[in-house]
Length: 551
Ligand code: AHR
Image (cartoon, rainbow, N blue to C red; front, side, top):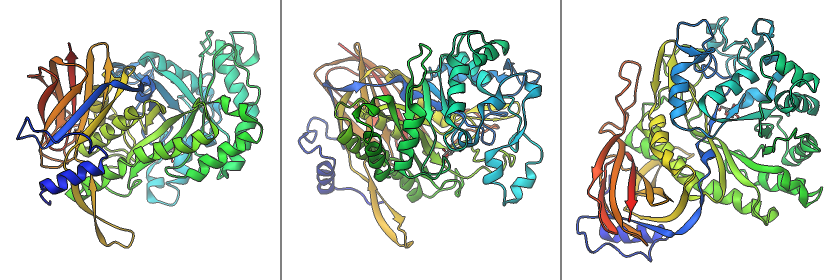
């Protein structure tokens, strides 16, 4: 790793656009600087940036959440108790369900009524991803292959209630029609015993309406959700959302937005909406954005070189550009900025661990690298609190960027969980502008021709928020072995006291496992913090939260 000199320090300052800030003079040892401008609010951080995603995929629903009422695994009405107890602590915003691509093939009517009467279907994922592999045979008759529908709308809404989250249901725009969507709305929201479907709901034990506000109009309509063009999807969207009955529940509709940087999808969709007049845009609460970094299931979660460590962190950092680029296009059509971004699938996607059963598609216990990716993404959403109204890592448990890992009676919190716990005080607070100046991290990666090329990533980044007199500053130090001695200045206030909480390890591959569930956990320490400028050392490979009480 190249050592960085003063010349490149100054040029990296220029590159961050923070050249107007002074190089610290007061502290000789500091090589980095953070300026928190508490009088420059960005916006309120939506608590729904702390949302989640649950799909009938691998071990997410069956085993992860639903263990069944008769299970020896402690449960609340069939729902894994440990999951409920720990998720509740995070004060989750909304939970998206039932997919994902699964939603594009799902009929909600299969998942209500007496469980023993619900139809069994072949699960979408077993039928597509697995079909040509040996793993398909290895799935045998498990719920990951044959969907029992034992977990459906009522169980999901009950789960949301248990953890204090709002349900967010994704309608099937690919293989079911508008009427099926309207009936799902009726089942969930119509007053008891006034309509056929609300009578059915009451018969199923839920006389009170579920009051579902958040509805996704399709999922990935550019791909598994129908392979539509953006123009075609705009037409479908208008059709699905014309004259929707509200049953007194304010509806918050999320459009099936772009795949990563596909600006054309965003532009053509909004153009297509506008064909029927400017008011169409008012139907949208959020425009979904999906972005995964990682190998989409090709590389093992805890095997990487130092260069690959940086490579993935840098790829996750692209979220910032995606938000800015799509936001800019949306602004061409939505001058009043009514529609915000809902990043309803994000995370790092690796290969399934070798020691999990075949049905647990993309299940692995993530590492410290994934935890930094959580910090990078949450900080990005917060720096853009004026643009992002919701964000959901994919997925809650046992697949991709999960917060929990389970197998039968085994249950652990992944490093992602700890980052969510650390960042919680940001939710609902006011994001304030913050500048970071630090020597960049340099690394090499392979380009498309597999040639080694130089690349770099910022040396420190994060976000800050203010509520009453408490300032929360979260910071990621991506450098694998270089601590950052940092001068932190609070412009417009002084610090009375503070504490730090840091997640780090000397092993960049560290993670929790069933055998060692507490290997990687954050540590809290009091801080010697006084005045408007303090110094703090951010350890290498770390995510840190500073809670600073202002006078
Ligand atoms: O999260 C896994 C899958 O990734 C989802 O089903 C789909 O929407 C996306 O492609």
